[in-house]
Length: 490
Ligand code: BG6
Image 1 (tube, rainbow, N blue to C red):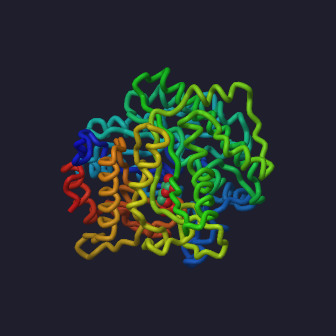
Image 2 (cartoon, rainbow, N blue to C red):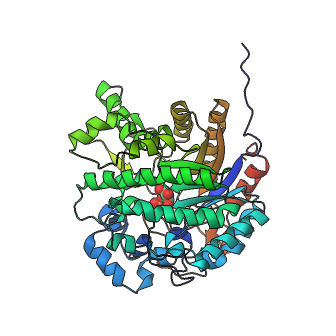
Image 3 (cartoon, helix red, strand yellow):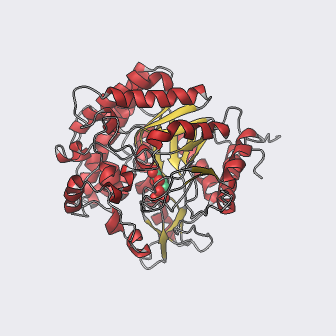
Protein backbone atom coordinates (compact mmCIF):
# COMPACT_ATOMS: atom_id res chain seq x y z
CA UNK A 1 0.00 0.00 0.00
CA UNK A 2 1.30 3.44 -0.91
CA UNK A 3 1.60 5.72 2.08
CA UNK A 4 0.63 9.27 1.14
CA UNK A 5 2.29 12.02 3.10
CA UNK A 6 0.92 15.50 3.56
CA UNK A 7 3.82 17.78 2.77
CA UNK A 8 2.98 20.67 5.01
CA UNK A 9 0.43 22.64 6.97
CA UNK A 10 -3.14 22.59 5.70
CA UNK A 11 -4.43 25.53 3.72
CA UNK A 12 -5.98 28.14 6.02
CA UNK A 13 -3.85 26.99 8.95
CA UNK A 14 -4.36 29.57 11.69
CA UNK A 15 -0.95 31.08 12.42
CA UNK A 16 -1.30 33.38 15.36
CA UNK A 17 -0.19 34.93 18.58
CA UNK A 18 -1.60 34.90 22.10
CA UNK A 19 -1.70 37.18 25.11
CA UNK A 20 -3.93 37.52 28.16
CA UNK A 21 -5.70 40.66 29.39
CA UNK A 22 -4.10 40.78 32.83
CA UNK A 23 -0.56 40.35 31.54
CA UNK A 24 -0.95 42.94 28.78
CA UNK A 25 -3.72 45.48 29.27
CA UNK A 26 -2.97 47.60 32.31
CA UNK A 27 -5.53 50.42 32.27
CA UNK A 28 -6.29 49.54 35.87
CA UNK A 29 -8.13 52.80 36.52
CA UNK A 30 -9.77 53.12 33.12
CA UNK A 31 -13.03 52.27 31.43
CA UNK A 32 -14.93 51.37 34.58
CA UNK A 33 -12.81 48.31 35.30
CA UNK A 34 -13.26 46.60 38.66
CA UNK A 35 -10.41 45.08 40.68
CA UNK A 36 -9.61 41.51 39.70
CA UNK A 37 -7.71 38.68 41.33
CA UNK A 38 -4.52 39.16 39.30
CA UNK A 39 -4.41 42.87 40.21
CA UNK A 40 -3.55 41.74 43.75
CA UNK A 41 -0.41 39.75 42.98
CA UNK A 42 2.54 41.51 44.60
CA UNK A 43 6.01 41.67 43.09
CA UNK A 44 9.07 43.43 44.42
CA UNK A 45 11.65 44.13 41.69
CA UNK A 46 14.42 44.09 44.30
CA UNK A 47 13.78 40.40 45.03
CA UNK A 48 16.80 38.17 44.43
CA UNK A 49 16.69 35.39 41.82
CA UNK A 50 15.94 32.91 44.57
CA UNK A 51 13.09 34.98 45.98
CA UNK A 52 11.61 35.32 42.50
CA UNK A 53 11.60 31.56 42.10
CA UNK A 54 10.16 30.97 45.55
CA UNK A 55 6.66 29.52 45.26
CA UNK A 56 5.79 31.13 48.59
CA UNK A 57 6.00 34.49 46.85
CA UNK A 58 3.68 33.37 44.08
CA UNK A 59 0.96 31.92 46.27
CA UNK A 60 -1.84 33.99 47.68
CA UNK A 61 -2.37 33.94 51.41
CA UNK A 62 -5.12 35.72 53.34
CA UNK A 63 -2.81 38.31 54.87
CA UNK A 64 -1.23 39.14 51.54
CA UNK A 65 -4.65 39.31 49.88
CA UNK A 66 -6.07 41.68 52.51
CA UNK A 67 -3.03 43.95 52.30
CA UNK A 68 -3.11 44.04 48.50
CA UNK A 69 -6.79 44.90 48.46
CA UNK A 70 -6.09 48.11 50.34
CA UNK A 71 -2.75 48.91 48.72
CA UNK A 72 -2.86 51.80 46.26
CA UNK A 73 0.83 51.58 45.41
CA UNK A 74 0.16 50.21 41.91
CA UNK A 75 3.89 49.99 41.16
CA UNK A 76 4.19 46.82 43.24
CA UNK A 77 1.42 45.06 41.31
CA UNK A 78 2.68 44.44 37.77
CA UNK A 79 -0.67 43.16 36.47
CA UNK A 80 -2.16 46.59 37.13
CA UNK A 81 0.10 48.06 34.45
CA UNK A 82 0.73 45.18 31.99
CA UNK A 83 2.32 46.61 28.86
CA UNK A 84 -0.38 49.25 28.42
CA UNK A 85 -2.10 47.24 25.71
CA UNK A 86 -5.31 48.88 26.93
CA UNK A 87 -4.25 52.14 25.28
CA UNK A 88 -1.98 50.80 22.56
CA UNK A 89 -3.98 47.89 21.14
CA UNK A 90 -4.52 49.51 17.77
CA UNK A 91 -0.86 50.05 16.94
CA UNK A 92 -0.01 46.62 18.39
CA UNK A 93 -2.60 44.99 16.14
CA UNK A 94 -1.10 46.93 13.23
CA UNK A 95 2.17 45.14 13.99
CA UNK A 96 0.36 41.78 14.10
CA UNK A 97 -1.16 42.58 10.72
CA UNK A 98 2.25 43.52 9.36
CA UNK A 99 3.34 39.98 10.25
CA UNK A 100 0.27 38.62 8.43
CA UNK A 101 -1.04 36.98 11.57
CA UNK A 102 -4.17 34.96 10.82
CA UNK A 103 -5.53 34.80 14.35
CA UNK A 104 -5.12 36.69 17.61
CA UNK A 105 -5.86 35.07 20.94
CA UNK A 106 -6.58 37.23 23.97
CA UNK A 107 -8.76 37.02 27.04
CA UNK A 108 -11.53 39.26 28.29
CA UNK A 109 -11.20 40.91 31.66
CA UNK A 110 -14.38 39.86 33.46
CA UNK A 111 -14.07 42.92 35.71
CA UNK A 112 -14.30 45.24 32.70
CA UNK A 113 -17.67 43.69 31.80
CA UNK A 114 -19.04 43.09 35.30
CA UNK A 115 -16.79 45.09 37.69
CA UNK A 116 -17.98 43.16 40.74
CA UNK A 117 -18.97 39.96 39.02
CA UNK A 118 -22.50 39.98 40.45
CA UNK A 119 -23.67 43.34 39.04
CA UNK A 120 -27.13 43.57 37.49
CA UNK A 121 -26.04 45.32 34.31
CA UNK A 122 -22.83 45.05 32.31
CA UNK A 123 -20.42 47.94 31.91
CA UNK A 124 -21.01 49.31 28.42
CA UNK A 125 -17.52 50.83 28.15
CA UNK A 126 -15.96 47.40 28.65
CA UNK A 127 -18.09 45.83 25.95
CA UNK A 128 -17.31 48.67 23.55
CA UNK A 129 -13.59 48.33 24.22
CA UNK A 130 -13.47 44.68 23.19
CA UNK A 131 -15.89 45.13 20.32
CA UNK A 132 -13.74 47.88 18.81
CA UNK A 133 -10.60 45.79 19.25
CA UNK A 134 -12.03 42.66 17.66
CA UNK A 135 -13.71 44.54 14.85
CA UNK A 136 -10.35 46.13 14.11
CA UNK A 137 -8.73 42.68 13.97
CA UNK A 138 -11.31 41.62 11.40
CA UNK A 139 -10.76 44.80 9.43
CA UNK A 140 -7.11 43.78 9.27
CA UNK A 141 -7.94 40.22 8.20
CA UNK A 142 -7.17 38.68 11.62
CA UNK A 143 -9.53 36.19 13.23
CA UNK A 144 -10.25 36.39 16.95
CA UNK A 145 -9.85 33.63 19.50
CA UNK A 146 -11.24 34.64 22.91
CA UNK A 147 -10.42 33.12 26.26
CA UNK A 148 -13.39 33.93 28.45
CA UNK A 149 -11.44 33.39 31.65
CA UNK A 150 -7.66 33.51 31.86
CA UNK A 151 -7.39 33.35 35.68
CA UNK A 152 -8.63 36.80 36.69
CA UNK A 153 -12.05 37.11 38.28
CA UNK A 154 -13.53 40.22 39.97
CA UNK A 155 -12.20 40.20 43.56
CA UNK A 156 -15.68 40.74 44.94
CA UNK A 157 -16.44 37.17 43.87
CA UNK A 158 -13.66 36.05 46.18
CA UNK A 159 -14.41 38.27 49.17
CA UNK A 160 -18.16 37.70 49.10
CA UNK A 161 -18.48 34.18 47.69
CA UNK A 162 -15.12 32.44 48.21
CA UNK A 163 -14.17 32.16 44.54
CA UNK A 164 -14.92 28.97 42.62
CA UNK A 165 -15.52 26.97 45.80
CA UNK A 166 -19.02 28.44 45.64
CA UNK A 167 -21.48 26.94 43.14
CA UNK A 168 -22.98 30.40 42.64
CA UNK A 169 -19.92 31.25 40.57
CA UNK A 170 -21.38 29.09 37.79
CA UNK A 171 -24.36 31.45 37.45
CA UNK A 172 -22.24 34.59 37.53
CA UNK A 173 -19.91 33.11 34.94
CA UNK A 174 -22.81 32.08 32.68
CA UNK A 175 -24.30 35.55 32.86
CA UNK A 176 -20.92 36.98 31.89
CA UNK A 177 -20.53 34.47 29.03
CA UNK A 178 -24.07 35.24 27.85
CA UNK A 179 -23.19 38.93 27.64
CA UNK A 180 -20.08 38.13 25.62
CA UNK A 181 -21.96 35.90 23.18
CA UNK A 182 -24.70 38.50 22.76
CA UNK A 183 -22.45 41.55 22.43
CA UNK A 184 -19.28 40.15 20.84
CA UNK A 185 -20.57 37.06 19.04
CA UNK A 186 -20.34 38.81 15.67
CA UNK A 187 -16.61 39.55 16.02
CA UNK A 188 -15.25 36.41 17.70
CA UNK A 189 -14.36 33.23 15.79
CA UNK A 190 -13.30 30.74 18.47
CA UNK A 191 -14.07 30.57 22.18
CA UNK A 192 -12.20 29.06 25.07
CA UNK A 193 -14.19 29.10 28.33
CA UNK A 194 -11.15 28.47 30.58
CA UNK A 195 -7.43 28.94 30.18
CA UNK A 196 -5.47 25.88 31.40
CA UNK A 197 -8.27 24.50 33.54
CA UNK A 198 -5.88 22.05 35.21
CA UNK A 199 -4.02 25.00 36.69
CA UNK A 200 -6.42 25.11 39.65
CA UNK A 201 -4.64 22.00 40.90
CA UNK A 202 -1.14 23.48 40.66
CA UNK A 203 -1.79 27.10 41.44
CA UNK A 204 -5.14 27.40 43.24
CA UNK A 205 -5.19 31.18 43.39
CA UNK A 206 -4.74 31.57 39.64
CA UNK A 207 -6.92 28.67 38.65
CA UNK A 208 -9.83 28.57 41.06
CA UNK A 209 -9.27 31.86 42.91
CA UNK A 210 -8.95 30.29 46.31
CA UNK A 211 -7.01 32.27 48.88
CA UNK A 212 -5.34 29.56 50.84
CA UNK A 213 -3.34 29.39 53.99
CA UNK A 214 -3.83 25.65 54.14
CA UNK A 215 -1.79 24.00 51.39
CA UNK A 216 -3.75 20.73 51.82
CA UNK A 217 -7.03 22.00 50.60
CA UNK A 218 -7.48 19.34 47.92
CA UNK A 219 -11.20 18.91 48.47
CA UNK A 220 -11.83 22.65 48.02
CA UNK A 221 -9.81 22.65 44.84
CA UNK A 222 -11.61 19.69 43.27
CA UNK A 223 -14.99 21.08 44.30
CA UNK A 224 -14.06 24.35 42.59
CA UNK A 225 -12.89 22.50 39.53
CA UNK A 226 -16.21 20.68 39.40
CA UNK A 227 -17.96 24.03 39.27
CA UNK A 228 -15.69 25.07 36.43
CA UNK A 229 -16.42 21.86 34.52
CA UNK A 230 -20.16 22.51 34.81
CA UNK A 231 -19.68 26.15 33.80
CA UNK A 232 -17.61 24.96 30.85
CA UNK A 233 -20.27 22.49 29.68
CA UNK A 234 -23.12 24.98 30.06
CA UNK A 235 -21.09 27.56 28.15
CA UNK A 236 -20.62 25.10 25.29
CA UNK A 237 -24.40 24.58 25.30
CA UNK A 238 -25.13 28.30 25.35
CA UNK A 239 -22.63 29.06 22.57
CA UNK A 240 -24.13 26.39 20.34
CA UNK A 241 -27.64 27.74 20.97
CA UNK A 242 -26.85 31.44 20.62
CA UNK A 243 -24.15 31.25 17.96
CA UNK A 244 -24.74 28.11 15.91
CA UNK A 245 -21.48 28.46 13.95
CA UNK A 246 -19.31 29.00 17.00
CA UNK A 247 -16.53 26.63 17.97
CA UNK A 248 -15.73 26.14 21.64
CA UNK A 249 -12.62 24.42 22.95
CA UNK A 250 -11.12 22.86 26.07
CA UNK A 251 -7.63 23.81 27.21
CA UNK A 252 -5.07 22.43 29.62
CA UNK A 253 -1.46 23.23 30.41
CA UNK A 254 0.09 20.10 28.94
CA UNK A 255 2.41 18.46 31.47
CA UNK A 256 4.07 15.85 29.26
CA UNK A 257 6.10 13.30 31.10
CA UNK A 258 8.21 10.24 30.35
CA UNK A 259 9.03 7.41 32.73
CA UNK A 260 12.44 8.28 34.21
CA UNK A 261 13.55 4.67 33.66
CA UNK A 262 11.99 1.50 32.27
CA UNK A 263 11.46 0.30 35.85
CA UNK A 264 7.76 -0.76 35.92
CA UNK A 265 7.10 1.49 38.93
CA UNK A 266 8.31 4.53 36.97
CA UNK A 267 6.13 3.55 34.02
CA UNK A 268 3.10 3.29 36.30
CA UNK A 269 4.00 6.63 37.87
CA UNK A 270 4.15 8.18 34.42
CA UNK A 271 0.69 6.82 33.55
CA UNK A 272 -0.73 8.21 36.77
CA UNK A 273 0.95 11.58 36.32
CA UNK A 274 -0.65 11.78 32.88
CA UNK A 275 -4.05 10.84 34.29
CA UNK A 276 -4.01 13.17 37.28
CA UNK A 277 -2.33 16.16 35.63
CA UNK A 278 -3.72 16.08 32.11
CA UNK A 279 -6.28 13.46 31.05
CA UNK A 280 -8.68 13.93 33.98
CA UNK A 281 -9.48 17.46 32.76
CA UNK A 282 -9.70 16.74 29.06
CA UNK A 283 -11.60 13.48 29.67
CA UNK A 284 -14.37 15.43 31.38
CA UNK A 285 -14.58 18.26 28.86
CA UNK A 286 -14.06 16.16 25.76
CA UNK A 287 -15.55 12.75 26.66
CA UNK A 288 -18.16 14.18 29.01
CA UNK A 289 -17.65 12.16 32.16
CA UNK A 290 -15.49 11.76 35.24
CA UNK A 291 -12.95 9.02 34.43
CA UNK A 292 -13.01 5.90 36.59
CA UNK A 293 -9.36 6.16 37.61
CA UNK A 294 -10.21 9.27 39.64
CA UNK A 295 -12.50 7.31 42.01
CA UNK A 296 -9.52 5.64 43.57
CA UNK A 297 -7.53 8.88 43.64
CA UNK A 298 -10.34 10.77 45.37
CA UNK A 299 -10.88 7.94 47.87
CA UNK A 300 -7.18 7.84 48.72
CA UNK A 301 -7.26 11.56 49.53
CA UNK A 302 -10.66 11.47 51.16
CA UNK A 303 -12.05 13.93 48.66
CA UNK A 304 -15.81 14.06 48.30
CA UNK A 305 -17.18 16.29 45.57
CA UNK A 306 -20.73 17.59 45.93
CA UNK A 307 -22.61 17.17 42.68
CA UNK A 308 -26.19 17.84 41.68
CA UNK A 309 -28.16 15.02 40.06
CA UNK A 310 -28.29 16.87 36.73
CA UNK A 311 -24.50 17.40 36.57
CA UNK A 312 -23.80 14.05 34.94
CA UNK A 313 -26.03 14.83 31.97
CA UNK A 314 -24.80 18.38 31.67
CA UNK A 315 -21.25 17.10 31.26
CA UNK A 316 -22.23 14.26 28.94
CA UNK A 317 -24.35 16.33 26.58
CA UNK A 318 -22.08 19.34 26.17
CA UNK A 319 -18.61 18.33 25.15
CA UNK A 320 -16.20 20.67 23.38
CA UNK A 321 -15.70 21.07 19.62
CA UNK A 322 -11.92 21.05 19.77
CA UNK A 323 -9.10 20.41 22.19
CA UNK A 324 -6.25 22.80 22.91
CA UNK A 325 -3.30 23.09 25.23
CA UNK A 326 -0.25 25.10 26.08
CA UNK A 327 3.03 23.32 25.56
CA UNK A 328 6.34 24.63 26.86
CA UNK A 329 8.37 21.76 28.27
CA UNK A 330 8.35 18.14 29.38
CA UNK A 331 9.59 16.32 32.45
CA UNK A 332 10.05 12.80 33.77
CA UNK A 333 8.00 10.73 36.17
CA UNK A 334 9.73 8.78 38.89
CA UNK A 335 9.13 7.11 42.20
CA UNK A 336 12.49 8.43 43.38
CA UNK A 337 11.83 11.46 45.58
CA UNK A 338 15.45 12.52 45.39
CA UNK A 339 15.44 12.87 41.62
CA UNK A 340 17.08 16.11 40.47
CA UNK A 341 14.64 18.97 40.01
CA UNK A 342 14.35 21.87 37.60
CA UNK A 343 11.85 24.61 36.70
CA UNK A 344 8.53 24.17 34.93
CA UNK A 345 5.29 25.97 34.17
CA UNK A 346 3.51 26.34 37.55
CA UNK A 347 5.42 23.36 38.94
CA UNK A 348 8.84 22.12 39.97
CA UNK A 349 9.74 19.49 37.35
CA UNK A 350 11.84 16.33 37.43
CA UNK A 351 14.95 16.66 35.34
CA UNK A 352 15.48 14.84 32.07
CA UNK A 353 19.22 14.46 31.34
CA UNK A 354 18.60 14.43 27.59
CA UNK A 355 17.05 17.89 27.41
CA UNK A 356 18.42 21.40 27.53
CA UNK A 357 16.71 24.01 29.65
CA UNK A 358 15.68 27.62 29.14
CA UNK A 359 17.12 30.35 31.36
CA UNK A 360 14.21 29.64 33.73
CA UNK A 361 14.99 25.92 33.85
CA UNK A 362 12.11 24.78 31.65
CA UNK A 363 13.14 21.69 29.64
CA UNK A 364 12.82 22.31 25.92
CA UNK A 365 11.43 19.32 24.08
CA UNK A 366 10.10 19.75 20.53
CA UNK A 367 9.93 15.99 19.92
CA UNK A 368 7.68 15.82 22.97
CA UNK A 369 5.25 18.16 21.21
CA UNK A 370 4.90 15.72 18.31
CA UNK A 371 4.37 12.89 20.78
CA UNK A 372 1.82 14.93 22.71
CA UNK A 373 -0.15 15.85 19.60
CA UNK A 374 -0.37 12.18 18.66
CA UNK A 375 -1.41 11.19 22.17
CA UNK A 376 -4.10 13.87 22.43
CA UNK A 377 -5.56 13.02 19.04
CA UNK A 378 -5.47 9.25 19.68
CA UNK A 379 -7.44 9.82 22.86
CA UNK A 380 -10.06 12.37 21.78
CA UNK A 381 -10.27 12.28 17.99
CA UNK A 382 -11.04 15.98 17.86
CA UNK A 383 -9.31 18.81 16.01
CA UNK A 384 -6.43 20.33 17.95
CA UNK A 385 -5.35 23.93 18.46
CA UNK A 386 -2.00 24.73 20.09
CA UNK A 387 -3.08 27.70 22.19
CA UNK A 388 0.36 28.52 23.63
CA UNK A 389 3.98 27.68 22.94
CA UNK A 390 7.08 29.87 23.17
CA UNK A 391 10.34 30.65 24.90
CA UNK A 392 10.77 33.01 27.85
CA UNK A 393 14.23 34.57 27.58
CA UNK A 394 16.20 37.71 28.39
CA UNK A 395 16.55 39.92 25.30
CA UNK A 396 18.78 42.92 24.69
CA UNK A 397 17.74 46.05 22.83
CA UNK A 398 20.77 47.16 20.77
CA UNK A 399 21.78 50.76 20.15
CA UNK A 400 20.32 50.59 16.63
CA UNK A 401 16.96 49.38 18.04
CA UNK A 402 17.46 45.81 16.81
CA UNK A 403 17.00 42.72 19.00
CA UNK A 404 18.81 39.54 18.03
CA UNK A 405 17.03 36.50 19.41
CA UNK A 406 18.36 33.43 17.56
CA UNK A 407 17.52 31.27 20.62
CA UNK A 408 13.80 32.08 20.23
CA UNK A 409 13.87 31.44 16.49
CA UNK A 410 15.58 28.12 17.15
CA UNK A 411 13.00 27.11 19.78
CA UNK A 412 10.04 28.09 17.61
CA UNK A 413 11.52 26.53 14.49
CA UNK A 414 12.00 23.18 16.21
CA UNK A 415 8.51 23.21 17.69
CA UNK A 416 6.86 24.21 14.42
CA UNK A 417 8.80 21.41 12.65
CA UNK A 418 7.46 19.01 15.27
CA UNK A 419 3.90 20.17 14.54
CA UNK A 420 4.54 19.59 10.86
CA UNK A 421 5.65 16.04 11.64
CA UNK A 422 2.55 15.44 13.73
CA UNK A 423 0.38 16.69 10.88
CA UNK A 424 2.16 14.19 8.63
CA UNK A 425 1.37 11.56 11.26
CA UNK A 426 -2.28 12.40 10.62
CA UNK A 427 -3.03 14.72 13.54
CA UNK A 428 -5.54 17.44 12.57
CA UNK A 429 -3.86 20.51 14.05
CA UNK A 430 -5.66 23.59 12.76
CA UNK A 431 -4.00 26.48 14.55
CA UNK A 432 -1.03 27.70 16.56
CA UNK A 433 -0.95 30.85 18.67
CA UNK A 434 2.60 31.38 19.88
CA UNK A 435 2.64 32.66 23.43
CA UNK A 436 3.40 36.20 24.21
CA UNK A 437 3.52 37.38 20.62
CA UNK A 438 4.41 40.70 22.24
CA UNK A 439 6.46 40.89 25.47
CA UNK A 440 4.25 40.97 28.55
CA UNK A 441 4.37 40.41 32.29
CA UNK A 442 5.22 36.80 33.07
CA UNK A 443 2.33 35.04 34.73
CA UNK A 444 4.44 32.74 36.90
CA UNK A 445 7.39 34.91 37.83
CA UNK A 446 5.70 38.34 37.41
CA UNK A 447 8.89 39.59 35.74
CA UNK A 448 9.06 41.67 32.60
CA UNK A 449 12.53 40.41 31.77
CA UNK A 450 11.13 36.95 31.01
CA UNK A 451 10.20 37.85 27.47
CA UNK A 452 8.34 35.68 24.98
CA UNK A 453 7.51 38.16 22.24
CA UNK A 454 8.61 38.64 18.68
CA UNK A 455 7.85 42.28 19.52
CA UNK A 456 9.98 43.87 22.24
CA UNK A 457 8.40 46.20 24.79
CA UNK A 458 10.66 48.72 26.49
CA UNK A 459 9.81 48.20 30.14
CA UNK A 460 11.81 46.71 33.01
CA UNK A 461 10.76 44.67 36.04
CA UNK A 462 10.08 47.82 38.05
CA UNK A 463 7.81 49.23 35.36
CA UNK A 464 10.33 51.79 34.07
CA UNK A 465 10.71 52.38 30.35
CA UNK A 466 9.17 54.12 27.37
CA UNK A 467 6.83 51.20 26.56
CA UNK A 468 7.87 51.66 22.93
CA UNK A 469 7.62 48.59 20.74
CA UNK A 470 10.52 47.20 18.64
CA UNK A 471 10.64 44.33 16.15
CA UNK A 472 12.95 41.47 17.09
CA UNK A 473 14.69 39.28 14.50
CA UNK A 474 12.03 36.68 15.29
CA UNK A 475 9.36 39.12 14.06
CA UNK A 476 10.72 38.99 10.51
CA UNK A 477 11.29 35.25 10.80
CA UNK A 478 7.73 34.52 11.96
CA UNK A 479 6.33 36.63 9.13
CA UNK A 480 8.22 34.45 6.62
CA UNK A 481 6.92 31.31 8.30
CA UNK A 482 3.36 32.58 8.05
CA UNK A 483 3.71 33.79 4.48
CA UNK A 484 5.07 30.42 3.37
CA UNK A 485 2.44 28.54 5.42
CA UNK A 486 5.18 26.87 7.43
CA UNK A 487 7.33 25.78 4.48
CA UNK A 488 10.15 28.25 5.09
CA UNK A 489 11.44 27.80 8.62
CA UNK A 490 14.75 29.50 7.85
C1 BG6 B 1 0.75 29.66 30.69
C2 BG6 B 1 -0.21 30.80 30.94
O1 BG6 B 1 0.68 28.86 31.81
O2 BG6 B 1 2.09 29.94 30.57
C3 BG6 B 1 0.30 32.17 30.54
O3 BG6 B 1 -1.45 30.55 30.29
C4 BG6 B 1 1.76 32.27 30.91
O4 BG6 B 1 -0.50 33.12 31.16
C5 BG6 B 1 2.54 31.23 30.14
O5 BG6 B 1 2.31 33.54 30.73
C6 BG6 B 1 4.04 31.29 30.37
O6 BG6 B 1 4.32 31.24 31.73
P1 BG6 B 1 5.22 32.33 32.46
O7 BG6 B 1 5.15 31.98 33.89
O8 BG6 B 1 6.58 32.17 31.88
O9 BG6 B 1 4.62 33.64 32.13
